[in-house]
Length: 163
Ligand SMILES: Nc1c(C(=O)O)ncn1[C@@H]1O[C@H](COP(=O)(O)O)[C@@H](O)[C@H]1O
Image 1 (cartoon, protein in one colour):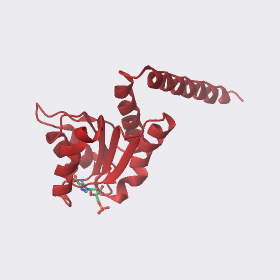
Image 2 (cartoon, rainbow, N blue to C red):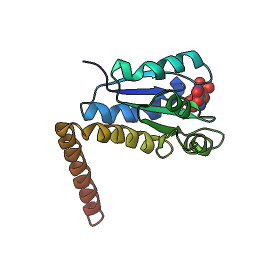
Image 3 (tube, rainbow, N blue to C red):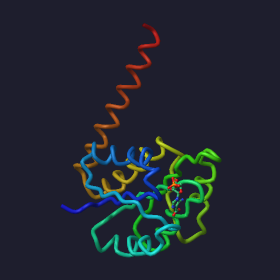
């Protein structure tokens, strides 16, 4: 079985955030691969990864990076697969630098940018699964069940306010 989602990140230091995307993919039974790839530190590997991604069987790429977060945009420039960008929270500027580096793509090269940090990474996993679910009714069903469970949790927690 080959991976359909590629989860890449600029550094191992991004893993505590990027693992949130992986956890969602695991929960939904979506095959993924994960790797450190950096536009700055390993530019040739980044080109090679992006150029071979479709051929390898990937359908969606999730790319997370912090600070001068050029990875998602550069990967998007080298593949026509959908790329979801995760702005990792940086120490110096709280991730605003990451967000602005990822979100302001020039017209023609889209990156679907999610929110800064862990919630954004969770949403990136969900968004990747939802893109795949357009062509996979069983996955769509698993996503619907997950959403129903999360709704129940919210309703329960709201009930706790009155205890
Ligand atoms: N933004 C990028 C890229 C890139 O965009 O290619 N490569 C690494 N980085 C980021 O540098 C931050 C600090 O990295 P270190 O913790 O390794 O010093 C990480 O958040 C990483 O994503």
